[in-house]
Image 1 (cartoon, rainbow, N blue to C red):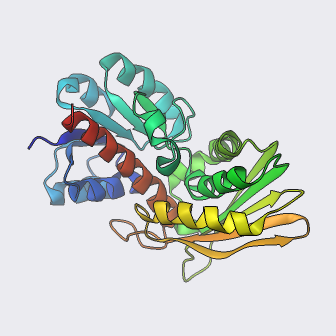
Image 2: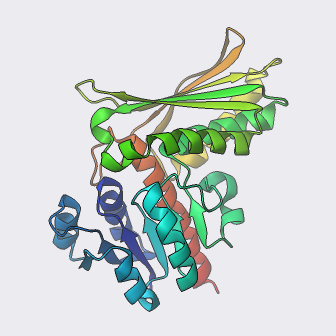
Length: 290
């Protein structure tokens, strides 16, 4: 059986963790792991797994376009601005894990069907993947949401150079994503890099200003959405809420990773990778059924 051929562009933590996840998929095959330095830890892991390597970045994709069905772009927002038009011209699908905001935003349990016909989709941000299901539950059970604030706290050690260089884009993209999916009048995103040792799991707090809260209806909707997220992110857990305090609904989540290439506390990286793999699996199944 022919598998869906994917290439991973970016050999950092996110790209390498994606590689390990692809390796256990029945539908996906990593045909190239691409970076800029063969001396990186990610390249060493790919070599250990027997995956084809390249340090030629986007040039490798250009030269081998006929062998690639999909590219996971795990570089940076700035780099994806360069890569996106090239991949479009080559006719290669792209799942963008940077906050570049080029393609439509994708949260698998919310809008997979909408994303199936798009050649470039954006996985929002880790905070977006964590908070948007809650924002959608709020929107489905309440009208006229005045304000949603998302506060994510992650282990500082889990934030690599690309994450740190993308912080401004992260904030803007998370706010945009929450607003798009919830239709809240105003949104705000905050990211805290916590240096605590032992390293903390990702914690995300969602605060929503709603005049007439219906917590019982919200609990029912949350239970359904949580179960669906957990089908591809088992470490996605509701820790507190929903509560109504000081005129705001409060929900607190913890996200723990699989512990593939990355440690389990790096749930912030794991959740966006799990979401990307989930949508890639859907692309692969669609091609298989054609």
